[in-house]
Image 1 (tube, rainbow, N blue to C red):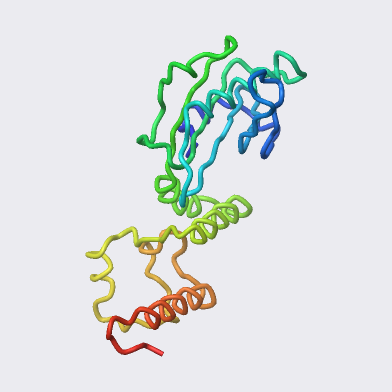
Image 2 (cartoon, rainbow, N blue to C red):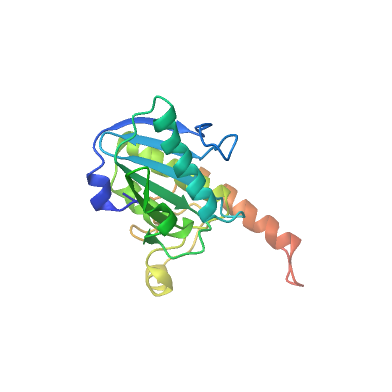
Length: 218
C-alpha cells in the first residue's frame, strides 16, 4: 500500500513469493540485470529498484532494462508473467511521489506497466502510523523498519509539533527516564529507558566534540 497505493494494493491478490536480487540473463543487450526485489502476487507482480538515502540516483534507462529483462525471462525462460506489472523506484527518483506515465515503460511485451516513484521521507512518515495500527509480527516488522531508518540517519520528529510539545511540557520536569506523552512519539506512547539512553549518549558525545565554546555536558 505504501509503495503503489491502496487501490492497486487491494487488487494484487495473495502474495506468492518474494525474491531479493533476482538475476535476469535473457536480455540480449545486457549480460544480466539484477533489480532489488521482485514480489509475485496472484494478479500482478511488483518490481522494485532501491537507491539508499545517502546516494545514487535512479535512471529511467535502468528501469527499462529491468522491466524488459523480466519480460524476456517470460518469453525465453519459464516465468509465467502476469499482464500487469508495477515498477517501484524507491529513493532518489528526482520526482515527486506518485504514479508516472513514462513512454518507454507504458507497455512492454503486451504487458501493462505502472511506474511508481517513492521517496524515503514519505515512507518514513507513514511507517510509525502503520506500526501503531498493527499488532504482533506485523508491528515488529514496522518497528524493524524504523530501526533501519534510524541507522540511515533519518530522525524521528514529534507528530504534534513544537506547540503541542511546549503545551505538554508545562508543569513537567524533563527527565531522561520519562516516557513520551501519548501522541507525541510517532511509534510508541512510552519509549523504554534502555532504548533512549543510547540516543542521549550520542547527543552528549556530539556536544562534547563540537562544543562551540559552550561548556561540555559530561
